[in-house]
Structure formats: structure tokens, C-alpha cells
Length: 137
Image 1 (cartoon, one colour):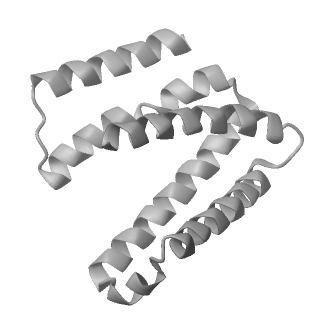
Image 2 (cartoon, one colour; image 1 turned 180 degrees about the vertical axis):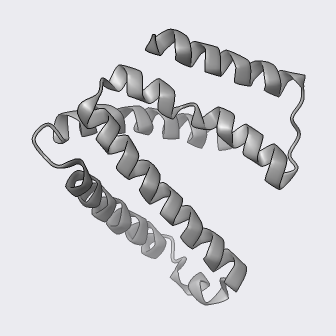
């Protein structure tokens, strides 16, 4: 079932890129990111209440809070950079570069989470990087 959510994530990410490019045509990229973020925050809290998950907030430990906040800061930085990139560049070139995050994630998961990094992972990373270069050049 996880693969279905991952696939839907990719579809929505693709829609995000196209809709954002049209939406930021005459809007400052930082303002556009803030508007997008407000919508995401509202939608996220709506889902918390729809699924009755709000009571779990008191059970979140200090370590989880720290890493969730750090993750949020990384997300914010990513979105600010992404919106600026698609505002001044072609979406068809920005998105492949943005997807190099797959390569960075695999390497960081190996280093920090001690996840498996085998020959298949190395070949996949090389192909993603090569594909990115091919699409951008």
C-alpha cells in the first residue's frame, strides 16, 4: 500500500510544479511560498482533526519535536529555493534537478540511518544523476 501513496505523491508533486509555475507568474516567489504553506498547514490540521489524531500531540517526545522542527525548516528552505528556481527557470529543467534529492536521500540514509546501499542503489543513483544531466543539458 505504501507504493500507492508514493505514486500519488509523485503525481501531486508534478501537479504542484505546473500549478505553481502558472501561479507565480507575477508574484514574488517568497510570497507565493508563504501562501502555499498556509494552504498546506490548513490542510494538514484538517486531516489531523478528521482522523482524530490531535490527542497524540501530548505524547510527542523532545527528540521527535526537535527533528520534526528541523525537518520543517529543511522543507521551508527547499520550498523557498524551489519556488525561486521555477519562477526564473524552466520547470522542465528545475524539476529534474530537484529530483536529485533522491540521490542525496539515499546517500544520507546510508550515512545517518545505516540503511542498505548496495550495487542496485549505486546503479540507480548513477542513472538518476545521468538522466538529470541528460534532461538539463
